[in-house]
Image (cartoon, rainbow, N blue to C red):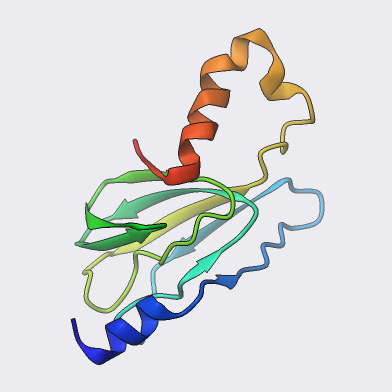
Length: 132
């Protein structure tokens, strides 16, 4: 690990402000430009995040887990879970599509209905990150 990687990993994650458009309850972004640094921004936010990695491969750092990602992966990360982005100059990732949303984006009681028990469990498991 070079000194830049050690420096970036030891930093505390930064709070990222997510601002959906007026009239929207979630945010969809496509990142196609490579980050100038070896590692993307170490951050967290109160929204859940669903990420599709299009092309490439590289290191995945989510919470305390460091592993590898490959093209075509779909990852669900829970609220306040620190993570790096997947598009950097070393990954070869063509793009990543990110959907960020609050757990209650469908209304306060939506996930408390009997039909949503399994989805609510999935959202609970996402607090540590899930590879789907």
